[in-house]
Each structure stands twice: as structure tokens, then as C-alpha cells.
Length: 369
Image 1 (cartoon, rainbow, N blue to C red):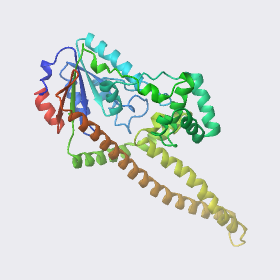
Image 2 (cartoon, rainbow, N blue to C red):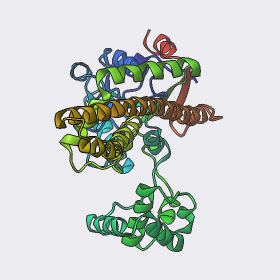
Image 3 (tube, one colour):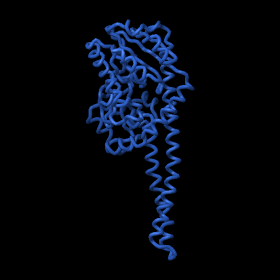
Image 4 (cartoon, one colour):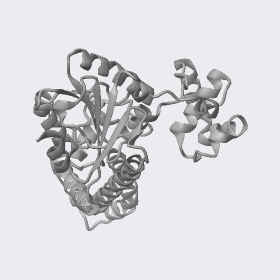
């Protein structure tokens, strides 16, 4: 089924602009906004956080002023934001945008959010803060293995899907069982209701799947710009401003941020090891009658700095390589899900019209011009 021109869309439409990371959907969303008919809703699990700008390729402040996005910069990075929170916010925003006689465009690359909108989510209860604190204390004292063993006994179905190192999901499954007395797998098996099934809205999924080689080059170029713009320093400042921010929080699990954090941890560790390793040299020099104390300090500091510079250079390049690999893997997962959605046999899924393109230029030619 062809995509209608934007002027022919019903007033109760909802448009999803879906594509892998770095494929140009943000620029296309800006052009759609310029028509005056649309408002933009971000579908990105990292853009919700304040202070995470460079590594998320967040539109600049000037761009956000010119092209306002809902669900951008709504939380500090220390807070969590569930898929259920997202669905509730989007459902509310769609109603508000339609009331302003505009059409919402959902734009972003978090496929988990799109899946929740199009396929629905299970009615898993929100965790009581008291239960969450109890499980956290248990985890801090006994570790992942203890919680994992608990799940083996009380929720073997979900346990088979999890690795023992998956702290977040293990913790969540334990919280649900302790709070409800029922395993998470029970709640996940309950019937789902998606807001895209709502009869009062017409949904259009615009899928853009560009050439993979072209996309890989774009990803590499974008990462190079991020490093040049100060991505590393952004993460350092984020940690300074939020002392309670930890590696297992969703914000620091975002692609790129996790690799930078690993680099910073490595450097801190290597700095301590390097300093300890050079101490015998320092003390040997200090005890020698042929060296003055000042020259000993200078010699030690020179060797320490040289060693740490070499260590940092190697670790920094490793960080960049891992960030590039992780971003390409993200794009691969996005491709896989979008391809499955685009290949649905029927032209409509409930009241969802699915149309796929090879480039944002094709979308412009059919949808805008």
C-alpha cells in the first residue's frame, strides 16, 4: 500500500518514522515539521536524559528550539524510565497533539519502544520502592548468583532467558516475584493490548532501510565527530555532576556511554597499577647516593607520565573501536527488526499501514513533494 501525501493524512493519524541509527531520520523529521502539520515525539531511550547530548547525537539546543521534541531531556540520568512509562506518555501526547489539530510523528531508533506501541506490553506491575530497596540490598550483599539461584527455583522459565551477569533483568524478575507472588514469566504471558490497536487512530509506519555499507560509513563518520566534539569529556562531566550514577543504570548502558565508562574505569585501574609498579624503581633511585632527591622525583614522574600516556593511547583507541562495533551491532539489530516488520504479508497490521523505503530521499519524494 502506498503512503499518502502528508496533506492527505487523516487528522487522527499517527506517523512512525523508523530507521537504523545514523540513517538521516532526524533531518527528515525536521522537514516534516516545517510543513506545519506535525509535532515530534522522540522514540529514543537515551534522549530522555539531561546532559547526554554528544553521545546520543541529540539535536542541538538551537535545533530543539526550532524543532521542539516531546520526551527529550525529561529526566536526570540517575532515574529510570520504563517501557510502560514511555507508552503512557505517548498515549497522552497523541491525544494532546490531535487536540491541537496536529499529527504526531514518532521518530527515533529504540525498537523496544516501537514494539511496545505496535505489539503491546504485558501488564507487569510497577515495583514497590520498598521491595526494590530490599532486593538491591540483597544483591549488594550476596551478588547476582544468589538472585539468579532464587529465580531458578521460583521462575525457571524466565531464568532460561537470562545470563547470570544480567543484573538489571535478574533484579527486576526477583522484584516482581517478591511483590506479586507470581513469576515474571506469568505476567509476560498475559494478553497484550497495544495502543496502535485503538480504533480511533490511524497508524502509518514509514520504514527506511538504507544500504548497509553506506550506513556503516555514516556510523563511523558520526562517531568521529562525537569524539572531536568532546564525547569523552561529556561522560566525565556526567559522572562528576551525578555522584550516584552507577554503571548498571540505564543511562550508562547506552551504546557509546558504556564503552567510555569502561575506558575510564580501565584508566583509573591502570593508573594505580602503574604507580605501584614503578614504586620499586622510585625507591631504588631514592636510596642511591648518585642522585639528588629532586631529580629522582622528576625521573619518576617522567617515567610514570610516559607509561600512562602509552596506556591511555592504547585504551582510548580500544574504546573507540568498541564503540564503533557496538553501534554497528545496534544498527544490525535495528535492521533485523525493521525487516521483519516490513515483510508482514498483509499491507495492514490491524489499523497500521506499513511502507518501506531505501532512503529518506524516497520518503521525501512520495510524502512531501
